[in-house]
Amino acid sequence: MTDETPESGNTRRPLGASESGNLIERQDFSRSGDTVKRQRSVIEAAIVTNRKAPGQRELARRQAMLRWAKWLLPGTALLLLGSIAIWPEIDRILNANHAALTAATRLKVESGNLEGAVYRSVDTHGRPYMITAKTAHQITDDQIDLTNPAADTITQSNEWLYLQSETGVYMQHEQLLDLTGEVTTYRDDGMMTRSPVADVALHEGIIAADTWIHAEGPFGVLDATGYWLSQHEGIAQFRGPGRIILNDDRNGQHDKAS
Image (cartoon, rainbow, N blue to C red):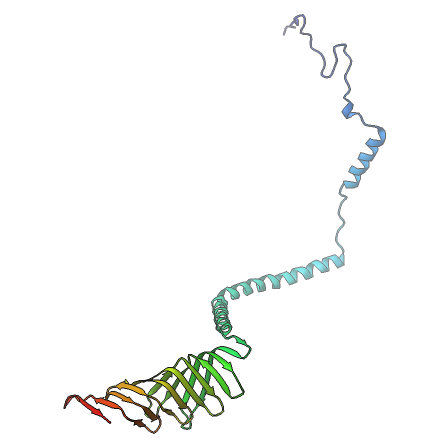
């Protein structure tokens, strides 16, 4: 191993030494004695000391927590599984309640006005009838004015009878319904009548009016200037002058005037 002679001008200096050969001391590393003591005290205070062994009370508390965890965690898991299983039923109940609430909000009671009014009762024969209206306005304890009223009832022969008009007045105590404006009646045997007014005694099942009436059905066509119909007794009376055209498949059509 031979020593190499360094070239002139390339003589190596120790790291941190100046050209004169003295070491250079960095000012940002210089600290006073008080600063060093303060930093050491902070470091010593942050050193974690050895933990002491837990006592009997601490051990008892930990054991109690473990016992509670053994019951709590499985119970929570069962509760979650049960909620997943019954969630479809809960969702059905919530939707049903929402539908009921939506239907209830359609009924608005304000200053004696009721929207979507429905009245139910039975006649002298125990047959039910129902009155519905778009709006109802309470005039007195007995009188109720109706808009677009409609009434359903069952006749003695178990036929369905339906009446409707533009306006009407319902007397609750007397169970009387006065219909006005394009009064139309339908019966499920095919009979239909039209008249400008009609007085309906719902309790007795009687429809009457002292005005013209036009009726059509399987029997033929009838026009009269007044009528009285008893739905439960099966009686119909018409006042003339009038006209009736009867349908007779055997003898042809007959046109009669009275």
